[in-house]
Amino acid sequence: MSLESLTTYIVNRLPELWLRTGEHIMLTGFSTGTAILIGIPLGIIIFRNAWLRAPVMAVIGILQTIPSLAMLVFLLALLQKIGALPALIALTLYALLPIVRNTLTGLQGVSPQVIEAATGIGMTKYQRLKLVRIPLAASVIIAGIRTAAVVGVGIATLSAFIGAGGLGQFINRGLALYDTRLILLGAVPTALLALIIDFSIGAFEWGFRPERKKGKKGSVKTLIRLLALMMPLLLIMTAGIFSYFTRPLSGIQTEGVSKISTRTIRIATKNFTEQLILGEIMAQLIEARTDLFVERYFNLGGTMICHNALVHGEIDLYAEYIGTGLTVILKQPVISDPEEALSQVREAYKKRFNARWLKPFGFNNTYAITVRTADAKSYGWTRISDIQKAAPRLRAGFTAEFTERPDGYPGLRQIYGLRFGEIRDLDPAIMYEAVSNGEVDVICAFVTDGRIAAYNLKLLEDDRQFFPPYHAAPVIRGEILEEHQKLRDVLALLEGLLDNATMQSLNFKVDGKGYSPAQVAGAFLKSQGLL
Image 1 (cartoon, rainbow, N blue to C red):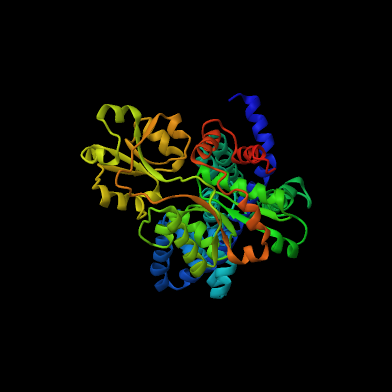
Image 2: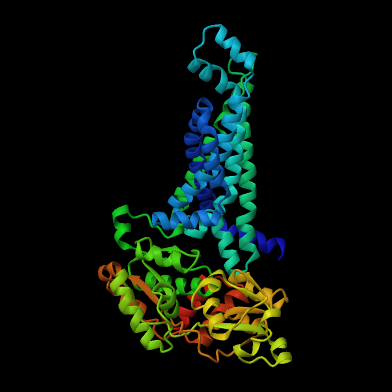
């Protein structure tokens, strides 16, 4: 990519870049601030009560060892809420350890001779703490805050996984679309932001550091020290301004809160190309055919995150697959008849979740076990049964969901007796690249994915008819459909409009030709006369 085209790309993305940067700073700033309010008093308490030190530090240390994504998913399940709240709680918990530890270390590190002198002039225990220990420990405490804030910048990128925004949103999209430009658009500003935050807190520490007064009042150095003290606050204020003035980009309009709450449809997607295209198709059609506003919650972590968000009213609409709803959500056995499967999920979703399955888009994006065409020809593989004997020496690359889902590898292993020599969890974006490059031998492809042809891969026949039908359809909250009944008619325009070949073509335009899901969705709707 030329420097000129890269510059143009960044300039075009600048408004959203400011928005995501502002969100990222607010996530980091709020969580670090909360951790300071909790951590410093906690550090003082365990300093003054030695019996509390070991258990408190053990608990905080254990929290630090929990993987970031695991913490986010746990909080998501606990709070039943996507977005900023679980992300802020997770970031606050991760920021506690360096702040509490440094507060304790700083207070313990004050020279006994200094404390003895303070006692000798009649200071009480409280006065010694306030006027001697805390000021002398301040540099160590600030160092802990500095560490917590910088680490928080990196961890905050994972917040996009649960719809909390921030620069991680670019990284998520880039991984889903295998787009290096988007990954860099999130990663580079994140690294720069970490440096800026580190510098601003370092400047604050320098400005806070006591020194003997010299020179006249109002000197340049005094002004510089004042500015240094204000740098963290200025950074957060700047982030707030960016977030406020670029907020309409996120799908939230500016016509008043009460109006927005009743006229905004929140559409979500999972984190792969086809979902992004379907999300854009529904969003753009609703925007064109109704007076409703659309708020996009794209690239959420997976099926259960989208489903739980729908059930708990965090989103209103997303595209789901019949087989996924049947086996993963409802925990029902596989039904091979698409009509019967759809009828069962419709009835169960309405009864259990007050959610409605609308008319399917038309394509059946079922799973397929896929190998390199050259290997299929060489070993005579045409059906899944054919690889049973070779499985122990094959390396499989599956999505995390497929590895655990009953309609994925566990069921496949039971029906076909497959035992692969190695199984790697791969993101859908890199799965095809991995099998093409010989890093794995077998993957769980999606039959509508344009990369199957692009990477010269071979779909193996499901000769024992294990995989259920995966016809995609809009799933919407019942209350929203009752409130905006026109949505049923608008989304019905998409019924049967996308067959497998069409969906594969749309996917390839994003994955193979580099168009954005919004561009591909818009062009498709125009070609059908719907825009």
